[in-house]
Length: 399
Image (cartoon, rainbow, N blue to C red; front, side):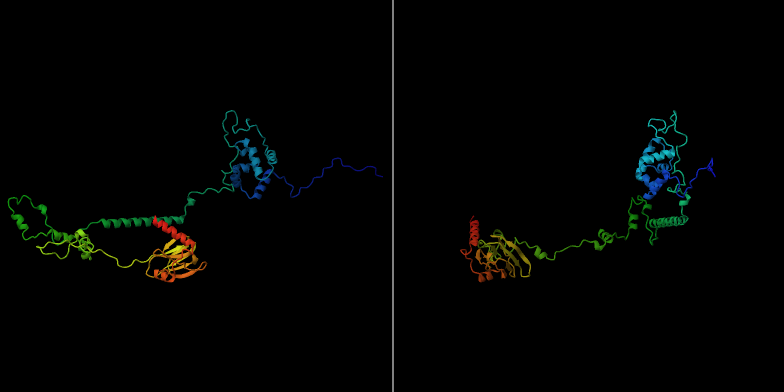
């Protein structure tokens, strides 16, 4: 019978195997993942948060040495955490735990960018600026000066320079040809008058007479005609209606004043001239054209057309309003909407009305003969409105 169990004194503890997802998730990994989810780059965050991209990269890498002033680290971390929709306090605690950063008092030496009592900056910067390195993925590498020159552009530039030079030379050559003066030989050599001594013939005119013998100097008119084109002569204009336009109506004719009138036939010298008869005045023997007016005693719509269809007048005539029909060769026609409210006045005598009340009358010829024959004299007792208008017109005429 076995009364004791076996027990190992120094038994090793079981070690749990790690899976593929057993790894430590750091603050930088979380922040980079959130930023990638938002689709933002370091430059986008810098533009929106107004924080340098190098500081954003230092926060994700938990590197406080990249900051120039450690006192701003807490604000930068919290602002970046709020931008990524993370808890700012938890993010800052994780940053301090991973980087070993401790918050210092604002007046302490740790919070200042100057180290030591000499107040001189450190010989080396606190952190490396990621923009100074050429391996950064978001900053393009600088290009050399010669790499920006296109070899094929050199040939085009030379052709352009040659073209400009050729155009310049051609213009200069044309200008020289234009300004060049050439002398052509003439058949007769001019006499040099300056070679003649002006005092040689002072005592006698023999030399002058021999030189100018048989020479007739042209007249001034001939020289003027020689150097002046005939087309530039100013022509003498004569009015075509001169015999009529020169007549003075106040001197001759039947319309001269009485004091200027003289009879065409005068009496003999020995007879006493009788006073001239007064000039005959112009007399109009034709009768005056009767005046035709439209007189409205009540509101009525009226349209007057000429013989060619042109509308002379159209509108609503108010009570007491008159319209004088213009005298034309062809008679005008009338169309009225309220026939009982419209009358005619021919030389002050009223005729009408045009028709019965409430009807429309068209094609009424507005001539004195047609109106006096077609319509009777207006009865003032039958229409009180017409009587009032006629009375008012007579009172105004008497005043």
